[in-house]
Image 1 (cartoon, rainbow, N blue to C red):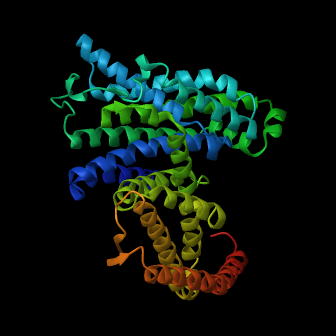
Image 2: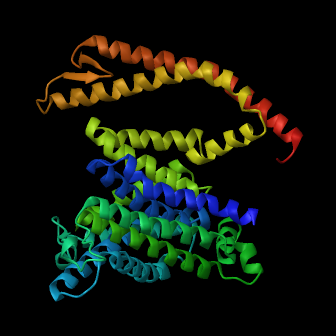
Image 3: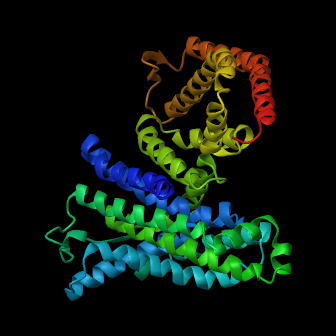
Length: 419
């Protein structure tokens, strides 16, 4: 009984979070952001079914997100035109079935091989579909895309989903169902065999399973959930265009999975929340926001390959054993230097970006960290170079202290054995 209660507690907490979030963040912008987060959580988890669970690095996963969204938006327009009694909550399932169909079709080709061959095939298929969006204008709508009006569909219990709060709860409900479904899938024998295909496909063949068949099934499941995410995006934005299935969208979901951490189920969820929040907020602050994403990705791959969740789990283990306090002095020592290096890097990026803006006659005056500065003068450049240079030098000098602290913690954890 206690074990069942412990297993249900995280899911009840997640459901409560989805229900209560609009009570805390009630503005229209917050509701829109949370709706996008819910959609991207499903998309990132579907991608991690390939990468984290089955070991398939795809460069074209946005194809199934985009195609699912396009089929969903055409279905909405067809329902409106025919005046059928179909309500909005059914539409994401249409997108999921479309993603499943295209996933099976493309998966027959791409899952014949794994590794770099699979990655290149996925990239080729992604570019093929993306380029076709400008040729098949009847389906993709060209550069303008396809639009719809979700409020014209049949109401559900009096709700026509014209308000953003109604769309949020629709996205939250589908997000919760998809999270539970994908987690349950990882706990099945099929999910374990996907892990085996990722780790040692030769052994999988020895025990009587076909790695290609397992890869194809995982690919279809992944495309199905990506299609659901695409259908939710079509409902939320009421428009689908070629950008939704291009390389930028595929790289975005890869960024979410890696930054959150592909080694745990919660990693892509955290990554989707972080990247969506930064994408919406940073784009209003700096026109160089994509550069920050690239630098963040490089930093995580080089220095935190387990992602944000992997990094937190390391500290959680140390905290549970009562050893986390040994890390605090080293972190406190290196934190000012790391902050200085980051501030210097941000200043250099923003000053350089403003200098490029001079060519567009936007002027050299700017506001940086609460101060008015002129990018055409030498003073802010000198400060930025000094902050960055001194910060990097001090981090390099002090970082061995962090390594020594972790060495002491790991030695004590190893001596104690498993918790």
